[in-house]
Image (cartoon, rainbow, N blue to C red; front, side, top):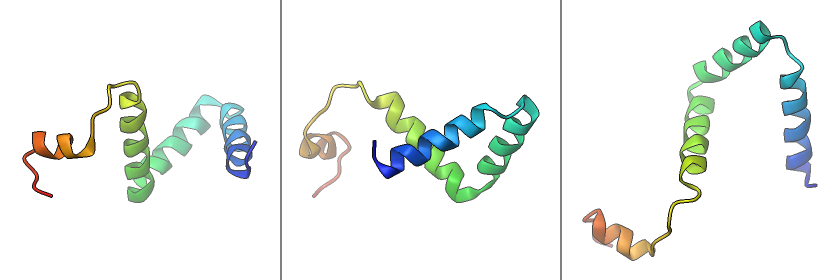
Length: 68
């Protein structure tokens, strides 16, 4: 387990041990932080698309009408 994974495990374990109101307070605080909120949105988007078929980068640019 990497240092990052160990840190994440400690954080998640601590978060799960909180009472519901405390969890809500932590989540509210995280979402109120613009940078953290953007990071969470990016992570959720990536996770939701993880199993989508992949395509070559140039093909994606072409479909989006972006010239490289």
